Length: 186
Image: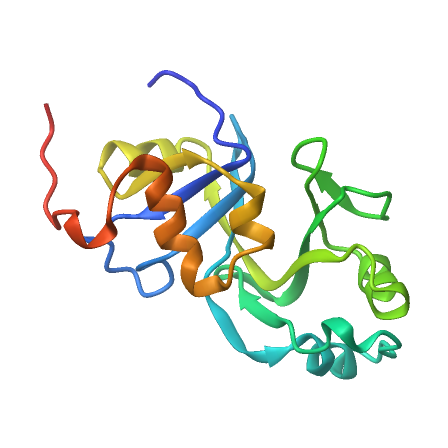
């Protein structure tokens, strides 16, 4: 299969996706290379706010403007670990720079900065991530499990979570409810 890079792209689960973790999900791919892919689901909030998370991990919340932000289910891998998708990239202890504007950080220092200074302001916090082994995502794409589209930071950081999947579909000019459950191969 020809290689391609889905870093900084959205994966859109096709209607036939019956995996409960990924059905009707929009996933932001933070890294994709010959060893596999890493992404986070960006449209599945869990019943927890940022303030509640900070209380659980003993980080004092000094800036209350972001206290009610939802925490998201990022995927079924390492669900006990937090990941912060943010803009700008900044300089944190453990950050994967997705592009020049967006980073994915798994170190506590970014959360402490958010609690103390409210920066970075554009954030999405997830518990867990979604991962694929070498060639796995390419195989799933060949099986029509996903649609792909270049990611839009506006969708990630400015839209309510319930509008993210339909907005990503609009980039492709498709209405999700018009997609067929069965797909053919040409």
